[in-house]
Image (cartoon, rainbow, N blue to C red; front, top):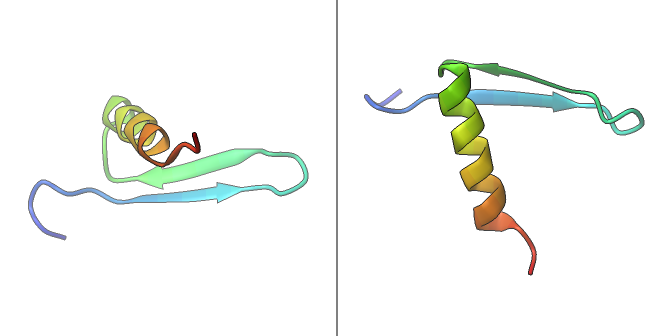
Amino acid sequence: MPPGFGFALLIFGYDNHDMFYLSSARREDMVRAMQEFIEKFREN
């Protein structure tokens, strides 16, 4: 991976909506990145 980048793998259930993730980032960085991702792609 390029310097300054991380990865995340999200796994979720269709029926029960459980979600798990694996990431190379610290938890607080991952949460912030996911919040930014959601805001960027949120439907209007």
